[in-house]
Image 1 (cartoon, rainbow, N blue to C red):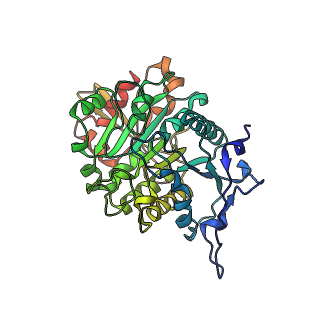
Image 2: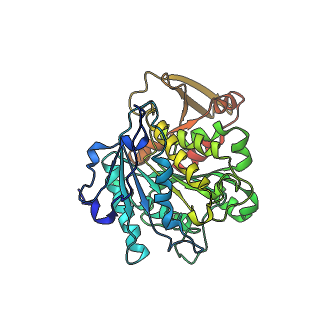
Image 3: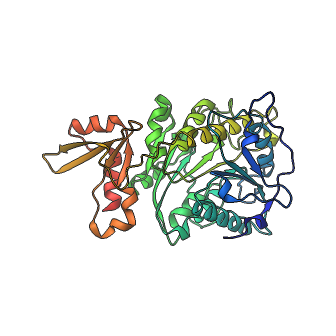
Length: 389
């Protein structure tokens, strides 16, 4: 296993523990201190900061974000479950931004291989590309989800920055991106041609209003993701004044916390990054405090996992069969006895079975089952079916 300590600066601040028998998050965290890098076997979740801004579109102080977030995170009391958290410190910036990407890529790869979930805090959102590259040697296709007010596809010149990382991911070879989803895009920030492109690629996009109408609609989309990237500009200015390029509209802070809890609860999700926070814009520390709570809810969700993603034996699941379009299609829905969550099976070509098997049971809502009963194909079923075909 790689010696990850070569990429990191240790945590230098001392975070006080609980008082009078009360436990704080810091009491459940093993910190990288000088000469004592944590053993990965001792953790389920590994937090690390990235002090890198050279991939940003505008000049910022996002490199100062990790320690500001820690200040608030480790003052929070622990949840009901005993957490096993590692804090690996901050990845030091390389001589070039490419060197930093390499360190992130290798760190994510090692953590995921050891069943430890990376939680990346700080830096600009181009770091998502390095996070994605960490899955390259795992030899499996992945689903990526961004909570973002726009699609960061960038220009066709191939440059990599915080507003073009998605385009670089889509065009990257070898390509191991199976699906991309966006939650919370705001139409006035998105060119119509990009919406058409997303539709032609059968990617999933939900407008801000669609999600805010009922935040529970985001849960199946989040449950289907391997990688989650959050742009703090997805939060409204009043709740996150320290986000880069923030606007008046966006999610409320509690809605982001709920979505982070959904992410933690997902058996499939294996890495998360929260980006584009500038402490210099955050005079009261409000945004850092919100991000700390988002991490708290993710941890809380992780320890509420049901381990009921339907792979292998599905005999315990309630199975519902629906024939639609004059029996042209038969949809098979599965309901978990542990969580009452729903999935739908997608038929796939036998020659692609091994490559795409993990994508052939797609999280859905009860409302998708009701839609099928009305002789209508749910959109998520059709998009996945077309990708598999």
